[in-house]
Length: 188
Ligand code: NI
Image (cartoon, rainbow, N blue to C red; front, side):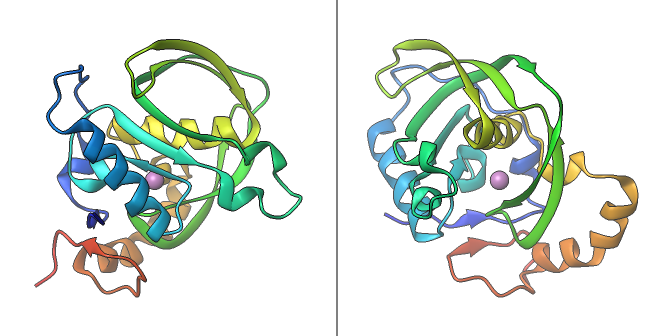
């Protein structure tokens, strides 16, 4: 089932998500719905707050990115992350142009470190601690921000953010063309 994606301005995007356990209701269905929603929207990552649930869950699928020769390492990167947190980040910060399904049509260069050590559980609640780097680290950092109530535009400079202000206000009101189903907090 395709779920509406919550747009910028909805308070759920600003709340830190709660950890979940095996008893979380209908989790298998929720994960399947999140993958379906993400694929339909042509996203590579989707976090639960973006579909209105304030929990520490996100899904990622890098395969759309792996089709060219640019990022072959993403071909098998299709994963569920539960209760994830970044233990440490390493390396010299690099710029990458990020976008977000909750903030359609806006892309901005964001600086982050290239390698992360991540603790998380998979969909079977098996615990993992793993190193990720490059684009996969980037996707994880962006999605971990979501489950902490942060957005990539928090990480750009004040001037850039000021320039985006009216476009962000338009997104909250639903004054934006999107090809996927969204829920706009200020739509009249
Ligand atoms: Ni996002």
